Image 1 (cartoon, helix red, strand yellow):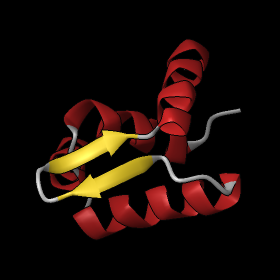
Image 2 (cartoon, helix red, strand yellow):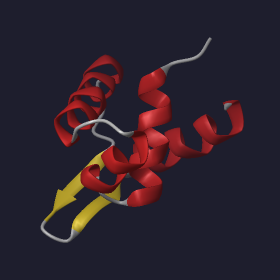
Image 3 (cartoon, one colour):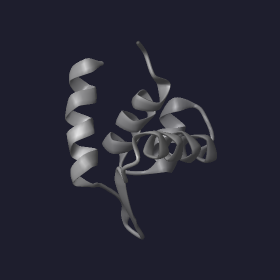
Length: 72
């Protein structure tokens, strides 16, 4: 079953930025942030550490990234 939030998650993880992922997806950064927040809330885990330098995957985020890449 395809989940667009997982696709967005991969784009954000690869880009390291909500803005860059939004540009690649042709949607607004706000839409990307909403999708990631919904995914984090649904899974009840934090997937990214948000820093002033960008985004860093948490341990849970790294695990989900590997699993999602395999699935998609």
